[in-house]
Image (tube, rainbow, N blue to C red; front, side, top):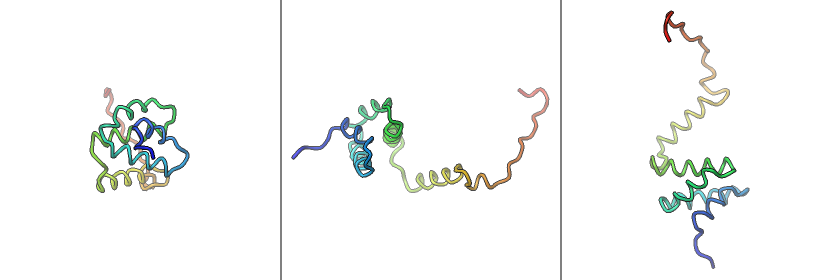
Length: 104
């Protein structure tokens, strides 16, 4: 029986085609906390954009704390507003007011 995977191995698993493996690796890296930071930072230059995104999110959570229900709710609202067909796009588009002459 083998021991727990090292953070660098877990980072590699973030690129797995199996979603369950990716989520397990993400959860394990989050649980490792600061012990995984060096490997997460190294992976920010990984070729796979999805791996970079997850590593950046995990490092961001370390800086700002875990996503709270309020934080998740605001993220959901922003996604809804910014997606095509979201409430934002239902509002009439207005032209910006003209700036006075001589305004930079």
